[in-house]
Image (spheres, helix red, strand yellow):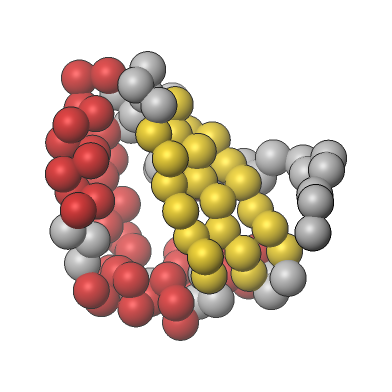
Length: 106
């Protein structure tokens, strides 16, 4: 099982909206994540907008590939796009490059 951690940046003026939207994550989005192999998925948000994501999966590249082709994910990314700081042309999950794991206590 791969453990994956990534960082993104939520706009400071959109922090509350980001939280509110995640109180009501669409059921079909949750189903797509599960079907793609995303397990134990969590998001942590700091007050300055730093977002830390964590998930476990058998194959992260495959799990992302499956989400990239899921129509509901396209709609979700469009819905969430205004919440993120990003470079021109970036999509939020596309900018989520995994961090290197340097220690794990089992």
